[in-house]
Picture 1 (cartoon, one colour):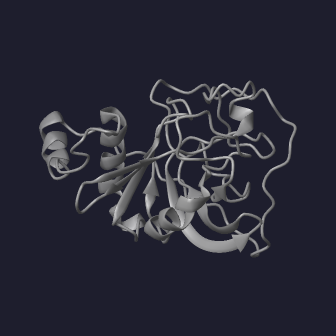
Picture 2 (cartoon, one colour):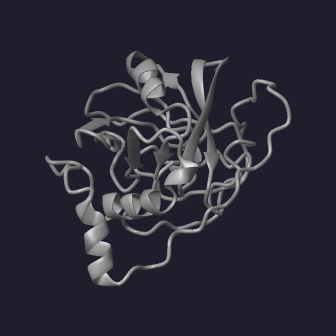
Length: 220
């Protein structure tokens, strides 16, 4: 989930490995791909962004990523039933850093937490995601815009399904890329463990994250 602020490479170098097993909730259809909004004239863009000036008062989220996320959200608000929170995951950061930013759209406050990326995106386990994929069994994270969906109980306990709205993450539901808790993620400045592509979070934060984001929140 999310974007890399330094421009991702989309190479396919790994093809082996298992994906997280689906929990058998029936056939799922791929989410509709929603293109990014067309660029606005500068004065119009600035007027639009001014509505969101209250977001991130501490400047925790990279400015360029938050701007892109806000522009996409504003242009597609009808697609996101949960308008309480907007999230940005910055995969340019090392996993030892807080890089999953949950923004309260009403108060503007930001909750920054640690998150995992796929082991296929970081084969040498140095904490940096170097490549991304939309392909099953790649064990890689996918970039793009996500919409949170339903909760379910699976192999990792209570989890939150995701739908990909971009061409780069349109297969995440079929790949069972979800938000779940994991013992290999902690709120410490250490290189986190790796997932099969899921943005896993610390077990003790899982329920709070799921409760805030479930039901159609946007993740960029």
